[in-house]
Length: 301
Ligand SMILES: Nc1ncnc2c1ncn2[C@@H]1O[C@H](COP(=O)(O)OP(=O)(O)O)[C@@H](O)[C@H]1O
Ligand SMILES: [Mg+2]
Picture 1 (cartoon, protein in one colour):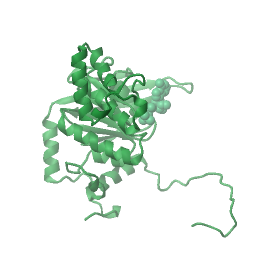
Picture 2: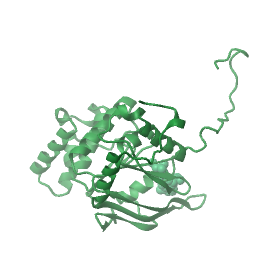
Picture 3: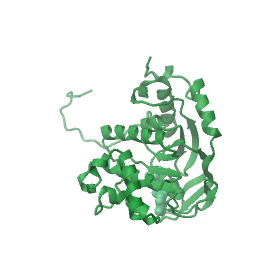
């Protein structure tokens, strides 16, 4: 059933009737996020850098959208603009039809690095944003508990971040981001600092949470498997300047599981991503000035 020979892979654009029906349903939902002709230039010592050029796309309600591209192609710049932490040079971002003009509790952010307050307990970390937006202490506590339960950390509500593993810290970060009931969850390489096994369980957690609540997610990753495993659609960017190469509709059916990693449609999508992101990687020769430190003839390959 599974196959790894890329020459025998199906067309990644071919969708089973079930997958096609899911995309029809998705596109009938209201547009949650609309990005229109976004441009961003930065000034640098070597002159202006065009980080983003003419980026336009829409994300629908309850969509799980991945963003992928080589390092430096503007992924973080894009998500920072969506979060209102950076202003675009031109173009606009609409969230439920309203222009984004600055940061706000209607967008939840999760970064790669742990951003919990080290001096606050898990519960207080999750309560923080709730109290900031004017909830009473008791409401904030009740709400916080609910989200801490959802990420499976109720036994740790009184622990401090340094007492938690990396994966647990990111679960708290997700609970904190969701506690304000954001219109969209923005994640910048959220599992990038985790070991492979923890990362896999975090991916499964995220899918499980997303299935149970009304949540639109935009996540950045540089991991092809992660993009295909999680996303409905994948926005592929290219660097210098950061432009949209393609918006891929992932043909892998839901519910997703790790066992699908070897299915033909999964591999076909991954193959397409590989081709878009590293078009020359197989022909490039690594040119390092390596000094031979073994005997001639004592070769390993
Ligand atoms: N504050 C900044 N000032 C100047 N250049 C920046 C700034 N932020 C990002 N850049 C440049 O913009 C480009 C995109 O960066 P970034 O969005 O961090 O890419 P990615 O997250 O895809 O790796 C890079 O060339 C980077 O050097
Ligand atoms: Mg980045």
